[in-house]
Length: 97
View (cartoon, rainbow, N blue to C red):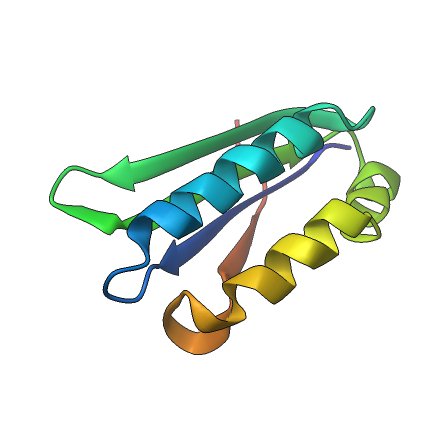
């Protein structure tokens, strides 16, 4: 069964472009993971400092492999001083239909 989630993070004042740059690099790496089905980054028109990341992995094993990647660890460390709360907020999704 696929593993889907979304993550949100709000860039601290003056850090939007750095967070966007880090997310672009992360997206390139994550999309190359064999178990990645979907990885899309959004911002809101009314709040461009707020980023939403929609992610789907083939299954739990693919998600666990994603969590173990070096590029993911580097990204999470890099955003500690760039986003509110020092990390993204993750919500796991259950497919309904």
